[in-house]
Image (cartoon, rainbow, N blue to C red; front, side, top):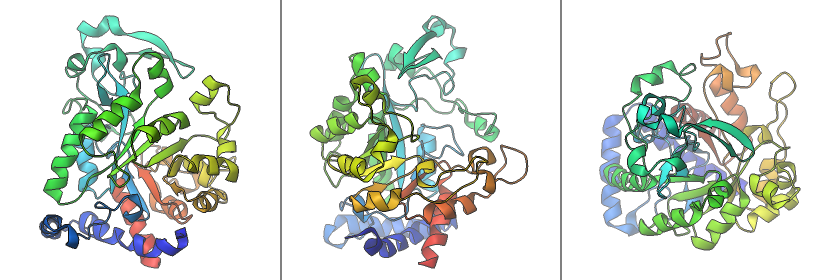
Length: 394
């Protein structure tokens, strides 16, 4: 089935989530939860999008809560994940890095200087160091130098307080969650909300951690199997900027893999280490996409690979990436939409304050209009309304 053949009915399924959640129909949500729970008791009557039927049954365009609801809460906290669901996100993202004793925890980077209060802990002052991660020198505190017990004494905080000052209200409220805690949380939330909670899980710097004896893929696969999320129709996507990590995971579990793609001239770090000369520009050709489709189900390109910007930062014309990826049977989950001017294309900014909201709906209309299957968003409620606007025209 082609993308065009399945898009219209799938897109309409987003209306329930957008209408009930964004419009604040709490009573409707409560009633819907009860209905879904009743349906769950009888699998033959369950019609919840995505439940037990794999990623192809999810709404299109899909809204993925980027690091939770990072536009409103400190990223990668249970509070951020929960708020993403409250806002209607169809899927919630986790980034995984290891502790010294091998536990997988949810942080965008192993450098936790900017996302925790570690600098306020004198007992860890000596842990501050400089490391080279994927060719970049970084100075700070790193998860692989802490046991889980030590990491749990820290509190999470807002990563970009200058842009999101309101989020600092929640500094110190949550700890750094382990991925196992997130899996347990997702099951509890699923029972409470009467639907499967979909996760989008990234292995961060997998070659770097493997060189330290802290391989991510085996640890991740073990947890997925323990909690029944290792099957082809399990409610989870597995993603990485290193194709070899997705290839490794494909040999361990059947959950769908997504290859993340950065700027066109960049090279995945595992390519650098292996001496593979290919760049992202090579991977987004029909030949490159065909190679990705041999072991993955989708790609997660930067939005600039879908619609490039010109020299002034304004959006140009879409590339052929959506068409070419769909021709190979790949879904596209580009990243990342944010509401603030500083993150928007120049033609969708309003005023001169970089922290103020710009014309996020205008930018989303352009991006979603290309036919992408989903989008990562720090502001999932905004993305849901934009998806609803698109669906209403179908």
